[in-house]
Image (cartoon, rainbow, N blue to C red):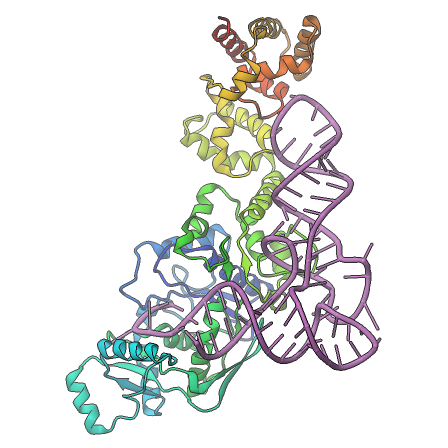
Length: 490
RNA sequence: GGCGCCAUGGUGCAUCGGUUAGCACACGGCUCUUUCAAGGCCGGGAGAGGGGUUCAACUCCCCUUGGCGCCGCCA
């Protein structure tokens, strides 16, 4: 335990699949903790029993670990400030809320949901700022007892200061100030005895000695609530860090509506690389103050600072993510890439489990040929299919363009014969053979190459033809060309 | 509606009083080439508007406009 070092927490609620915004916040937490030699804690804010979603905590942990952002304290790893589930910390909240009630900074509220709803309607109609009217704030003993009889399950509200302003310093916003007469007496303990976020997070952040609270800009408006709780307890508030939100392509806050863009696990499934994602997320809303695109994890940790966090929202740019992903794929060694796509090729039925030595050897050759063009790992099976399957499906447009000519069968036949006659199957010989056919027939090399590519791969695009022919192998190539020549022979 | 935050090209950032306003992505063109990528080269494209402060403002202040966020017994 190093009390003088920063302690940051990521505090998700298990109410759904983690999304890009959650993870980006975690990236900032993680980077700053690592940069300072501090502690990164994971705390689960499961105080809403109605919205609990089975499996979402597991997804969150999986996402963090996939990103290489292992927490130092929290679920599965423990730590000196546990438990790390708020649902297991109820005693703490009740103990501290008692203090607030005793000091007059919190009170029981017996108002029914119906009355609250009615009140809001009236406020809305009168164009008044919405908020609790504090009817229960100054109840005398007698009326309190009466109310308690009518509503035995009261909530507890925090008694906000109504005078002056609440001010705070935010690491990315600077000085921020809120008028207290506009503040609301919010609920801190619900009727079911569970605390609300506003209360639980403050109590826990204090108890867990959190020094920096990093959370989305959406929380800034409720920061005065938290500040006043700290004041009421006489506690030292943390350094506030409210980075701007990540917006979807329409400029709105990322939400369930843009599910495809936001659900973090889908990026794992698509085969993005953790380091590419880390690089992307870190540089979205943060900058080292220089014109640079690529940062390794170590560089990110070394350079990360709160000052570099941007104060304006950023729109999620998939094209940029993909560009970075391509960069990272190309930086991999062939062996690394091969290992990464192996499971996907096994799933496609191209490689057995476990793979044989020959299959691995072949995989490496194939991988070397597609590395430059592969972006998402999930594209690999489709991209390499013709290396594994001899059932060639001809691309319609390509066939029309390169195979439908009268001369096609003759060309294909000539290529096949020439290739079949090669005694040494080498790249140089293959290229010489194909160019030789072109010369012999008096046509351009392209007139040989395109039909041959179609015959061997069924497509108009892909790795270099000579290289790919070499890897697929003599007999298979010759067979495919013969087959194609026959198909287009009539 | 109230409150809060924000405002550099389509997008993400740089420049934190003096620059021909820079980089990257995307886009367009050229190049390399057997195709597709990757690479190289070139190009179009920005300080929301208005007031101040200052010798000087994208940079500081104010207003307007615009965008976003929050206003739950949800987080």
